[in-house]
Length: 354
Picture 1 (cartoon, rainbow, N blue to C red):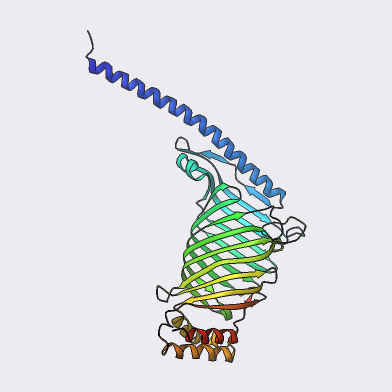
Picture 2: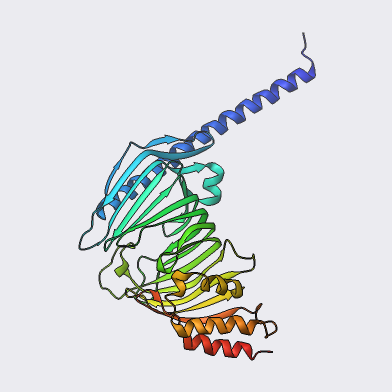
């Protein structure tokens, strides 16, 4: 009996579909094997280089996965420690869980190699008796190449201890970019960092105070020092100057338009130089500054007088309150030292502006 035409046509479509799926599965399998092999080699190379650079690394075996929607290799646990030495005078450690190199095919094609750390991450850095500890519930790194990294974390908790006064700082919705130039010549940029976070809880202030901030932005560059030896990027001796392009934030308790910004340059390692302090909505900030006995007691009498004069002139000078205020502040050994005379000169010039 002759089959109806639509039945024959239906069978042909099914055969074509089966053939297409079979070819797609075969190609996907081939690409998966090639990609996981490349990712495995990349992971092993990174671990080998870390050990050559003085790190002791212990890991669980690498596991492959992702087929058929992607490709990755994964470590269930990683523990790495770096004892201080003459070549790298810092003590560091990292303990991580569920570290995955790779991702879906769409992610690999669009973003390049991605490192996803879905488990708890803990890192520690000890330098000259100062201890920095970082904890994150998850962390992600995207790399176009090993020297151009994009990172993000839903939350990052930092603790300062050791010779530093103990402080706890929490960053929410952190993201940023890190650019490295390991072979930079003296005076050229060796490390660049830009980062932003929606909120910071417990940001440390002078004299033992802290505050909460929102919409925080940071952009810095570190230039290479003139030391003849090639040093680790974690070694402060690697850097000659800190170029602060932007460090700005809004106090959580202030009006939406109020903002504090810093920019300038410091010579390292002594951290001497000058920064430009820019205040928007500085009337309320000045009032809160003078309402803090812990801060007011450390201000020189001349500076206190200049600030009080500023508040008085604001009531008789139209538009002074809305105008941003910029002031150059000397920095000596990492501590900002406001200059009352410079502040008074700036105040007088501001009050003469119509």
